[in-house]
Length: 136
Image (cartoon, rainbow, N blue to C red; front, side):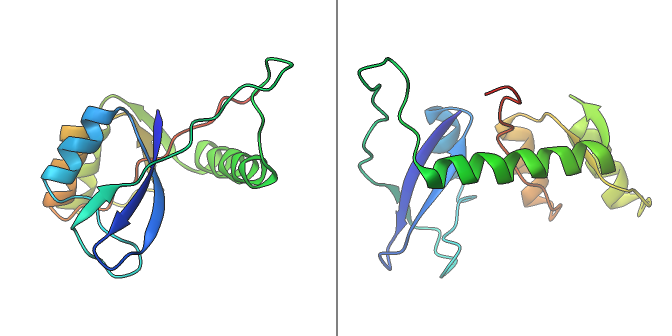
């Protein structure tokens, strides 16, 4: 996973996670990334400072990052308790629910960036969430 600081033409900035830099480029070119404030699709990466290891060889983590990790872990726990894991059949199952108007308590699993972009183009609500390592 890679985190980028992004900006739009209105000078709004926001962070987002991607599977890889090539996934970011594919989603940007297909205009699937938009500013959460103004909905602009004209998005560019900003210069980011890399996380550097401290003298003790541990990565210095800010309070905001710790809080973000904690909230992400809570979200992960909630999804795992309340939704059905469908693995790599996520795209197929999401379409079945959407087009068959099938009732579902929710699903989660894996999808490629291409599958995610296709689901979004079809008007199917999906979200890519970077699961944190539980013991980290």
